[in-house]
Structure formats: structure tokens, C-alpha cells
Amino acid sequence: MLSVKGRIKVKMAEQTISEKFKKREFVITDESSQYPQHVLFQLIQDKTSLIDQYKEGDEITVHFNLRGREWASPSGEVKYFNSLEAWRIEAGQGAAAAPQVAGIAASQEDDLPF
Image 1: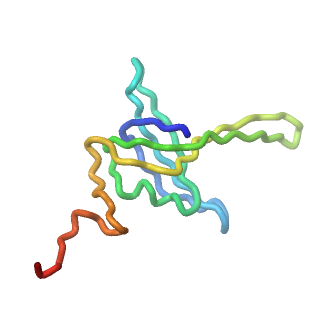
Image 2: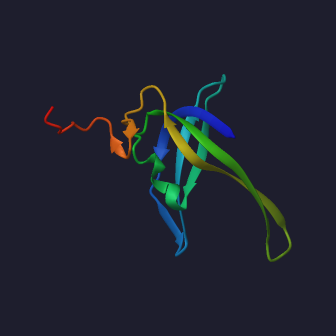
Image 3: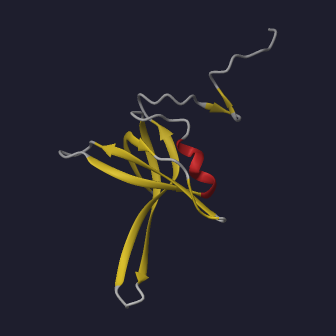
């Protein structure tokens, strides 16, 4: 399992690539080394909403898979591409997301009479 902590720099809109495929990209800034790194991640299919509860500037931990693929052009030139496919996002310090309890945000008031 790969993971990285950082602050959300950019959240992009969801893109529908085809009838059966959608994705959403976001960038975090990892400041754990001397030079900050701006890292692009993608969320696909039913995971595109995972970033909704966070805002730019929030600190998060992203759990992801490294994906790689080969592509050959019609002229025979071969290229390789990598992507970082996020599958879980956790709030860090400074994140505004409310903890989830049984599908209900913990910040909602309890309407029980006792």
C-alpha cells in the first residue's frame, strides 16, 4: 500500500471520458522534503466523490495504487505512462471534513428527546 500526506492544492471537475468511464483529478503538495512536490492523483468511477468533503488547503493522506501502461503509436513508437490512482483519502490536521458515523456526519444534531 502506498500513501502520501500533503495539502490539497487543486481539485478539478469530474470528467466523463466515455459512457463507461469517468475520472476526477486533484493535486496535493507534499512538503516532507527540502523541495515541495506537487503530485497529481486521479479518482476513477465510483471513487470520484471521495475528494468532495475536503477543500483546497486541507491536509490529507492519500492511499493510492501506482498504475503503468504501454502505448504504441500507429507509426510504431512506444511510450509509457504512469498514473497515481487514489482509492482512499483520510483527513489530516486542518481538514474540515466531519467524521462519519454510520453514514451520518457526526456534526449533525441529535434529535432524540433525552
